[in-house]
Each structure stands twice: as structure tokens, then as C-alpha cells.
Length: 279
Length: 294
Image 1 (cartoon, rainbow over the protein chains, first blue to last red):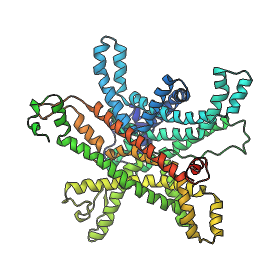
Image 2: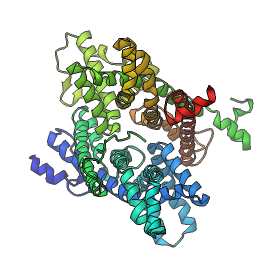
Image 3: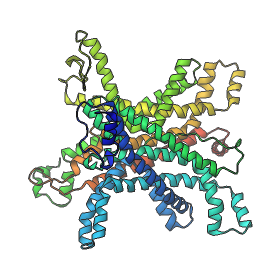
Image 4: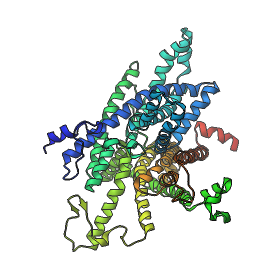
């Protein structure tokens, strides 16, 4: 089988398009490259959606944590402590077990309402259930970063805004929020890189890969088990991750340039990438 | 364990719970908490040693050593750690077996990789197929600990390298002007002051290490995630003394609480440690305690 043929068979295998059966014997290098790359679709899907939605929720959480109102402060602080203080791996397990129980509980309460029961069923699938966990997790970590940045917003800038007559949401949108993002961006970039790497946990934890539609690590593990040789599939997966991490860093540094466009390029601080490892 | 536990079917209320929570499976679960503690106790010092070695290698003027330090520290940063955790134990295992194969059975000339199989002679197997089950599980555990130590060592090396650079140059110049040799000033001035700068990063690493321990489960070590999964599933009265429904939610919630407690305790301990290392330093944190203790 030629490599082009393998590509058409397996390039979209992870989302269920193409050849149904995975290669079982005489596994070629091409098949490993194509299938592991196909799995990367899921890693990118999880990372992009979790980071995009988590960004907004994290901003809200950070403001709630910084607020003096204890009805906002306590829930936000507790939420952040729980999701930052426990392993993502356990969170996946716990969430999956909760989601599996949901329809059983839901049938009694929501009998006859088809939409709600259908929704709870989706939560047991990785595409939604795992995404919810990743969303909460990245929200908590990003909120802590944003909270720290919020506290470092210079007082003078806020006072100047007030002197100009800006109050409330206008002041937040024009002064506080851009400054907060600018201060938080280097750490937030690391968080995004980390989130991307954490997507590998989805299928090795409790969420089952339905019809062998898995992520890059799922296929890498499959090949390692089929060939008894970990030295090829895992480095392939690692290479894909390094490649996409570089793309992610490029995208984030574009935003960083935009956030710092009023600062003399010579005085801009260079971002140092130090992704946190596990959570 | 209790005297009244002989006939579980007749038990009710708190007695049932007492007997249920002290049956053999639960003791395996409790002892797996010790496995996690043992992993932390083994990995932390090992990672620190690797971290020091990596940091010193990066500072070294000898080119190959320096290059090794650079590669070691940057590798762990750009690859998802879980790929490392899956890869390092298998790779180590195969490396050990390959070396033993070459030493113990030189007469076997067949290649080790036969198609898709990794074949070594029986004497080179690690552990030997005749050895007890506990040897196998200990060996698996040690491989996992080594994998953890290599990954966390790389990150510790980064932190320590940064901290060594953060010590003010004046301190080292003063040491030199007192006539200390490079070795003396390293051990007496540079290293003791480094801790204050390294502690925030190291405490962060420790928190991450705690939260990484459930990955042991992926490496086939029977840790608490494994046992919680085993015990908590539905148990029918036909096969089990203590039948119950699907309790996985409760058991995993208990694990979550365990990790939250670990995090909280570590936060408190590291708070004290950083106060200790800040004492006497000309920083904001150190200045406040200085006046009080004088």
C-alpha cells in the first residue's frame, strides 16, 4: 500500500472518516505518521476550544476572586483551589463517573423532556465531557494568573482613568483589562502550552475512545503495543507536539506584540517559555 | 478484623461499615497510599540530584557536559510529560534487558528485535520470570520512579540553574576578596544563598509532583487509583461479602480530597520554609523578621 493511499485511508480516521480497521500487521512508518497525525485533530480540538472558552470564564473568575463581595470571592477562591489543588487525572475520573450517573438521576426528574436527557448522554462522550473538564481546569489556572496580574495593575493608571471620568465597565475595558492581559500574557502563554499538552490525558484516563477514534497518544500507544517498539510511535507523537507547540507560541507572541504595541520594542521584555508540567 | 465481622450478611449500620472499610481490599487501598508516599520520598531526592547534576552541567565550561545539560533541560520542556512517563520506563526496561542479554548470554546471536518482538534470553529477563510477584511489582515501581525522577530532574535543573544565576554577584566578589577559592565560595556562599531563590520554583515543582502521582496507574503500578477503581465498582451478593452499588463517584471524590489535603499541607510547609530562607536576607521578606529577632 502506497503512502498516498494510507493518507487517504487514515488521515481523518480519528473523526471516523476513511478506513474503519486500524493496521494490524506489517505496520509501516507512513501508517504511524498518518494515524498519529490524525489523532492530533482531537488534541487541537480540545486545546483550542478549552483555551478559547476558558479565557472568558477565567477573566470572570479572576475578577470575582479580586472582589470584596464575599458571595463572589469565596466561590471563586474555592473553585480555583479545587481545580488547581487536585490532579487533572483524578478530575477526569470523577467527572466521568458523575456524567455516567447523570442520566440515571435525570430520568426520574426530567421524564419526557427529550433534549435534557440527550444532553446528559453527550457528557459521557469525550468530545463534550472531557472538554468540560479541560474548560474548568484551564479556567482555574488562568484565573489565578489573571488574578495576580489584576493585583499588579499600576494604581496610577486606574487613578488617571478616573481623572478622565472613566468609571465602571468603561474603565475596566479600556484600562484595567488591557493592562492585566499585558502583564499576564507570558504566564498565560505557558498555561496555553500546558493545556495543549494536557489534552493527551483525555483518552488514557476514563473517557473511552469510541470506535477507536482517539487522540495522538491513543494511536501512539496502539502502535507501541502492536509493534512492541516504543522508540518509533512516541517520538513521532512528541515531534507533532513540538511542531504544534511552536505554532501556538507564534500565535501567542503575535497577541503579545499587539498588547505591547505602545511600548518601545527595545524595552519590551522577552517572553520565556516555561510550561508547567503536570497538573 | 473485628470479632463480629465473621458473617457480613447479618451486619447492619455502623458495624457493616466498620467491617467493610477494614476488609482486605481496603487494606490494599490504604497501603497504596503508602506507595504514593514512597514514590514521593524516592523521586524528590533523586530528582534533586539529577537537577543539581543538570544545573552544574549547564554551568560547566566543558563543552560536551554543557551540551548535555542544555539538551537535558530543554527536552523535558517541549514534550508532553505523559509521553515521557510512558516512554522512559519501557525504554529503560529494554535497555537494562539488552545490556544483561549481551553480558549473560553472549552465545545467542539472534537479533534482539525480531520483527515486532523484543526478545532476550531467559537469564536476561528483568525481573527473572521465576521470581515472586512482589519483585515484579517493585521493579515496575522503581522504573516508574526513575521516569518521574528524570522528568522532574530536568525541571529542577532549570530552577536551580536560574537560582544560581540569581545570587547577587557582589556576594561572590566579596567571597573572592576574602581569599576564598572558587570551591569554597561555591559551597559557603553561593549554594546556601541559592536556596532562597530556588524555593518558589521547587515548591511549585513539588506541588506538580504530588499531582502527577496518579499517573503511576498508567504505568501499571497498583496505586490508589487502581484500587479505588477495583473496590468501588458494583459488587453483587453472589460473589462478594459486602455487596453494594456503583460507588465510584464516592471513592474518586475521596481521592480528590486526599490530594487537596496534600496540597494544603505542602503550601503551609513551604510557607514556613521560605520564611526560614528569607531570614537575614536583605529582601522585603527577610527584612521584617530581622528586626524582630535581633
